[in-house]
Structures are given as structure tokens and as C-alpha cells.
Length: 363
Image (tube, rainbow, N blue to C red; front, side, top):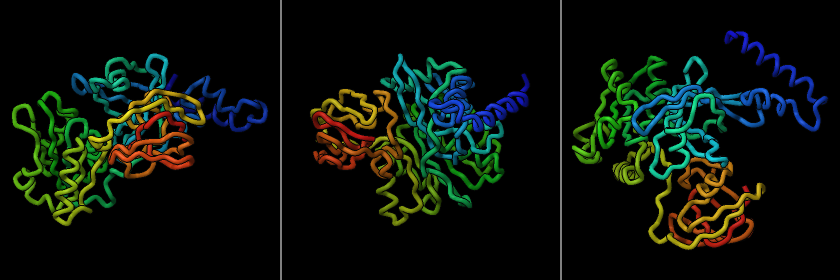
């Protein structure tokens, strides 16, 4: 069957569904469409993995065909992905690595396997083309403005290159590569995700300068190197994604230089205070009623995701106030400060709060 024929059949199915809803009560037409093809459902956004491409020995890019209900992303944004591992649905957040301008409508996420990562290990080593996964719509403000600044500085480490790769690919497709300096840190050359593509782009565009810092041989990338690697760093728009320590150092440096508005950082995990290693408890998530045991140092967001709960999620750092739930019973501990609190009905941030005893929380 040709792609045109498939598209025509999809359109017919959707139009039929829109006109016969009254015949299918209590099930909606969308429920039947989901049984025929999961990507046709508009009530539950899904995607089908169409290809798995190895980037390094422990990182892959997944090409995904999003289903009905998908909205176009902006380069640098992220999505949450729902994956069934050993019969349990887990949700994780990954940056989109593809350009929004991709002509075939597919998107890619790029995943690096973490040593103790249930989902990342599954996606890197076990996922097969044809697998249907859960999706959420794109989120996040780690994006380039319009118009794009004439001079850019990207500073990344490890898998932090992922959202920046989407930006570079978008700039290439739009034919508007500005003056770009990319400083990327990774243990070894063979661990550079997108390494071959980045080097090709640097060779193709004279105004794209790439510096790769291999920490095993040359030490970690220090912001004290900026005057040498990028003499005009203070005059550039800066997008930075990497470990918390690097981002904290950058925020301090740019703030002290009086140019904090030029710096844009992408956080994925909160900085946990040393005093937060407390006793956890049993957590019950409402309205689903799903339960999980939590220690006193793991964010409720992660506890819920590990239990298969679709958790509201944003920056995951307590900054955007998207990761919230209403406390119905129990107390929580703020992982940034170690302070314990909790009143019935209180709105708490699950990304920076851990259980301080048994907890019921409504999402």
C-alpha cells in the first residue's frame, strides 16, 4: 500500500469516527480507532518507534512517528515518553533532538543509558522498531528567540548536547546559521553523541566553531577557559545544558557580570541539600490510587514515574511550578532546603519534594 493510500484511509477513518459517535455509546469512536491503530486516538497521544539509530555504545536516537493530537515543537523543547518495562508503564522526560522543520513529520529523541536507569537502559538496549509508546506534547522554554541572535554560545556536557543539536539542525534547515561557538565536554572522543555530524557541520559552516573537551585526557571544561575559547562570551546569547555544578557556576558568573539575562540553562534535576536524607514512607497517588514506597531523598515526581503514574512535569527543578500536586495527607520534605512541611490541601512541587512519612497526593 502506498503512503498516499494509507493517508487517505486514515482520513476516511477519522471522518467516519467524527460522525458516528452517537452510535457507539458508551464507548467513543476514538476508543475503536485506538484498537485499530493506536496512533489514531486523540484521547491518548501515542507514537510509534520507526527506527533505532546507535549514536555511541550507550546512546541511541529513536525516530518516532507521533499520533493524532501531536503539536509541532520548538527546537530545544522536551517531551515525556511512556514506556512499558516488564509490564509497568514508566514515564521519563527527554529532549527532542530533531528539527521542527523535518519534512516527514517524524521526531527523534536521543537517550543515553544511565547505569541504574530502568527506562533509559530499556530504550537503548531493548526497544524495537514498531513499539508503540506514550507521548506528551512538547514543553519547555529552552529555545532560541526570533529573530535568532547574530552571535551564539552553546556550552554542553554529555547528553546535554541533545537540545542544542535540535537547535543546530533547525538553523541548518532554515539556512540561517549565525556566528556560533559550541563548547562540548565529554569523557572521551568516542562518547560524543552526534560526534560525526557535529564535525561535519563545523567543516561545512566556517562560522560554526566546535571545541570538544575530553575530560579523561584534558580535564573538565572550566568556565575559567571562556576568555580563551570564546573571547566575546559576555556579549553572546548563551544556551547551556549539563551537570548541576556547571550550571550553578555559570549562573553565578553571569549574574556577577551583570549579564544574567543573556544566559539560558536547561535543568533536569534539583540540587539536593545534604540534610535531606530523611525517612520516607508509602505514597498514594490520587485519583488513580496507585501506591509506591519512597525513601526520604527521592522526589515524589520520580517515585510516581517509577510506579507508572503520569506525573505533571515541567523543568523538574522547582522553577517553573509545573510539577505540582495537592497534598491530601502526610508531610513532605523540600529537597533544596531540608525543610519539612505539609497541610491538607497544600499545593506541593513533586520535583523538589520527598515523602516525610506516609503521603497521599492528588494530581
